[in-house]
Image (cartoon, rainbow, N blue to C red; front, side, top):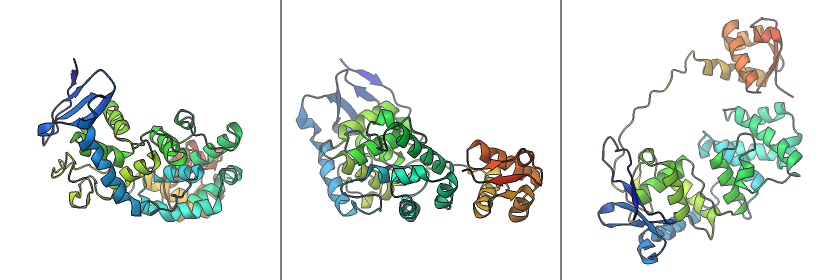
Length: 337
């Protein structure tokens, strides 16, 4: 006999509970749009969910090589670089930056051999520069600990700097064809809406991961994961574009309108984020530089520049003298080696 997992109700639309069977689950569609997970017998009941696979793959086929990091066969290094770049940055912005980066550093060996200053200058303009430092550190660890070969095991990948569970799963599945679901925010949204009929915020992570694993096309997990991510990026957005979605005839969320959430963005003007960004751009353009020179270029006071430099040093993005860390106008700041 199964047991019930109660899900928090959506503010706009109370959602039903998920009933789970103690044996290995497979997601099925029951009448009246109630998400139910049943045991692996009764495969005919799985058809409504599996039928969406072919529709999604057909939709994805002409998009398969839409981005420069996609190739046949896949290059795990290029997959790794792209996935790190795609953290917190939209694919349209990543595409030209990725091409420039792999042109400069075409292999993990060339990236590991470069200085951090070279890597940061090549990364410049993409933002979130800590990702560049982490990627560089990861490349050096791959050379030191893995004979220059990107690991395929997600449990090994996740130990590298800057690589979390999602990035590890994406590299394993897209780069090596391992049958693991890769759940970024886009894919998570598609799985929850299309199969469970709810928003990701009301579903426990474990249920989302199990559902994604059951829905995964194990014959070609790389294509499947990229298709799901692309769908979330292009159609199943925060505000869904159901008319463009190939899953609209089977999706359990079609026609629903998500509750609008007005997220308050922290003020950027005058914030430490603004100071850090201005200082980092100045150092990339002129290294080494004194606190006084940085103040002249950025227009910020020496104490604020000193505070920004302290944070950038902690993140491994710059090196600085004690005077610079104290905000001394003569203190010097440079890119790391």
